[in-house]
Structure formats: structure tokens, C-alpha cells
Length: 190
Image (cartoon, rainbow, N blue to C red; front, side, top):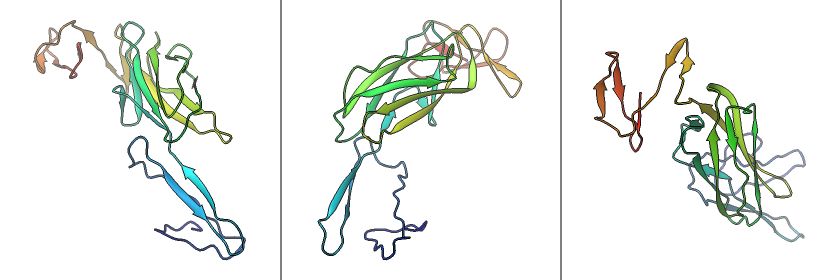
């Protein structure tokens, strides 16, 4: 309240008092809370607060990592508790980096895909999901793309991927004498 954390109940006494909710990101998909506001002589008002979640195996450290157009698209799940409306996907700065599919299902949970493009990018692309509430919520997901046919420069170092078809051992010396490792459940060696 008024910029300070509280637990349980807060009392607003003045018209300048402000109450805001900040989600800490620790709830599981489908998490929601009910907030009740009451005052003497008026009917209690309640509001349901449900964070919008986007999950998928290709999301690591809150970033969607894609591997170009030559590999299967990333499957993502959208979850928003107690929401039964539609969702819309979009992107910013992603024209040849990432291509999100249209979202055909409705809440509280549905899926969509994002396919990597032909352009490598370590930043600058954002895939978004928006619900259709009267006050819409948008989830922005930073997106990177490392096409299999090329690498992505990170701090001046080019990181390449090699599609080996069938994973070999977890760590090995590659044909160029560099260390290679396999991402679990993948046929990619780095």
C-alpha cells in the first residue's frame, strides 16, 4: 500500500492512498486470487486477479529460443485461470526471425506455435500473447533465433550448431577438436 509491501488486510483511509498488486512470478499456471474491497455503507466489491502464463520447452530463463525454419516449431501453452475468451498472438521486430501462428483456441488454456525464421538474432524480437479482456493483458516474450545453417554472434564469438540426426554421447571432441555437447531430447550438437 502506498508503495510498501503488506500481507493480509490493508486499510485505505485517504483519497490519496493507493493499493496495487504485484505478482512475484512464483505461482503455478492457473493461479488466481480474489481481492475484496469494502467500506461502510456500500456493497463489497470483488475482483479476480489471474496472471497470464505462456509456457513451453523452448522457453529458458524467460526467453524463447528458436532454431530456424528447418526444425519443428516451438509449441507454447497459454494459461489464464477463469478466462474463457480468445487470445491473439503477435510479434515486434521479428519479420524474418520468428513467426507465431494464429491462436484458435480459447481460455483458460490453449496452445499455439512459433516457428523460427531464416535470420539469426540474439535480441530485438518479441513474441506476444494478448487476452481479450475489457482491460487486455499482454505477455511479451523476448525471442532469439539461431538457425541450424548458421550461428549467432554473442560478444563477438560465433556459436554454431550442427544437426547430427541422432545424438551421440553427452560431451565429445568434435572434428574441429572443439568440445561438443548434446542438448537433452534433441538431435543438436554444439
